[in-house]
Amino acid sequence: MTIRVIVAGVTGWTGSALAKGILTAKDMKLVGAVSRQAAGQDIGAALGQALVGVKVSASLKEALAAPCDVVVDYTAPGVVRAHALMAIAQGVAFVVGTSGLTAKDYAKIDAAAKAKGVGVFAAGNFSITATLLAKFAVMAAKYVADVEVIDYASASKPDVPSGTTRELAERLSAVRKPATAKRIDTLEGPVETRGATIGKVQVHSLRLPSFVISCEAIFGAPDERLAIRHDAGSSAQPYVAGTLLAIRRVREVAGLRRGLDQLLD
Image (cartoon, rainbow, N blue to C red; front, side):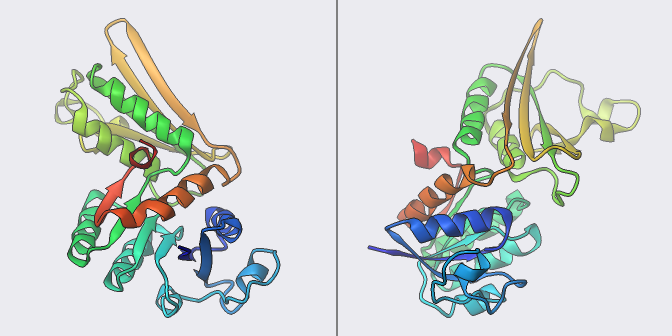
């Protein structure tokens, strides 16, 4: 059965690559797209391809007028929660590709999805290798008590930390042992230099030119260290396969699921 998909953020870096992937997928149909800058254009024209007979909408509300099975959101942190709740209210499954949501945001989305019997899937990163970073780091946290995470991104990235890093910190917090480092409230000097506490993990965000997205989990034990790091390149292609997998699987379970490794396993 063909899966009818709407992509919000269709002209963005990842959204455009994903839309092209959907157009070539035999089991999917791109029935709508959202982009304020390309509103009114044919989706194909907006992507620099042949016309597909479907126009880009200026808002998700407008796009949802078309029958749809799954909405995928690659827009911006400030609107993704509202988009998720809007889709859920109409009984449409939702894939969160945008970073910046908090644990409270996800809790609200999960509650709404369960109440409506709708599936929602989110991943801090839809790359297979980034998923392996999280998987290996969670394994290590069960054995090594001390871990901190460094989040690298371009100077223009608006949200801190990245979705990859936030999700990793939350997952590490669920399995790690008590840290041996001094508590933040016992330190002298500017405590901000120790980063932000997400769950039970200290996170440090760097925003500098030349980075795309990188995430590094650093574990420390007496006389030894372990670093697990993922670096993204300049193409959005690594995220397409994982997002297509999420589109195919998101409707299997009502409520929110997080982490691409759940689908890989």
